Amino acid sequence: MAELNTGGKKATPRVDMTPMVDLMFLLVTFFILTTSISTPQAMDIVKPDKDDKNENRLELKASKTMTILLGKKDKVAWYMGEAGKTAPTFENLSVVDKSIIENRKVADASGIKGEFVVLIKPTSGSTFQNFVDIMDELEILKVKVRQIDDDNILDNEKQSMQQQGIL
Amino acid sequence: MPRIKVKRTSTVTDMTAMCDVASLLLTFFILTATARQPEPLAVQTPSSTYEFKVPAENNAILTIGQGQVFFEVAGNKVRARTLELIGKQYNIDFTPQEIQRFSVISTFGVPVSDLKKFIAMSGSDRMKKGVQTGIPTDSVDNQLNSWVLQARTATAEVNQQPMRVSIKGDAKEEYPVIKKIVDVLQKQKVNKFLLVTNSEAKKK
Image 1: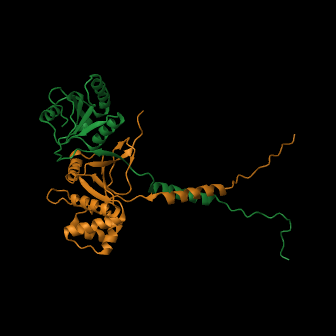
Image 2: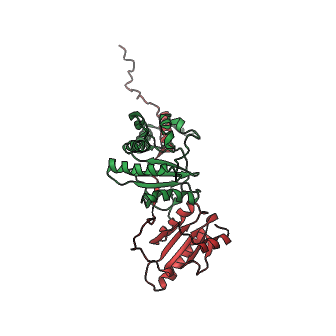
């Protein structure tokens, strides 16, 4: 008879799984690197209608409006109220959030009715990154009323920006 | 004194469990992930703290970089219908094969006149440098306007949903380039946009 293994102890058929594990992790790594798991994030932006003849527009209180002009080299110019009446302040984009907080405090303490409004005017010298950064900053600071205006950059705004070399 | 004999155990560990875990992970990744589409124009999107997901459907993505615009609309059926409409507008007859081939192309940027040639190319040829030059946006021949308009019509027809427009701009792109594209959209009364951004950790 062919029963040679008479010792009763049957050797269990073990397979060395190590190379298989190696292969598996290689595949896992490959799939992680080649696929995009998360969908990209986005910010939603609403711009005013260009040919909106509707008179029912939000009236902005000059004393509660802060205009931020985006310029070259990540620089901004901002002023409160109407253009030309107050001299604009020139700053780096990275520190403008402090000014926004400060201005909002002053505006809220003034007792004049109406929301604090930030008007963003990106000029030709600014980049897409600048625009996204400032919108992001307003979102973080929870400035509810924000307006984007890239059509009406006033002459005195242009002038003062040119003087600073950021237009 | 006689030394105490330490019985040496072999260092072989049972890898079966580890193998199980690895294959489980592998299966998970294959099933959940979608393959990354090759992009004809690689852009570095700016980062923001917004946490709004770009919708997978009823959405068109305009990729803007190096002064060029590339277009993509979500959904194979919508793409097929968009091409039909574009063909109608520019008096080009697309065969069903061409429409079928076009429906699987994601992002593209060629003028309408080169569309037939572009569809006939193989996938790797399309990605070659200089093949895709962006969609013309001049005021004389504003093809981007047509694409967006027809994609909106197609989305409304196929999905009965309004189409959203996402702008995937390069962070270093100058604002006037973005403004030019946005102005094209605003002419169509598209006043709401999504700006595709990288997620960034919230400042505390």
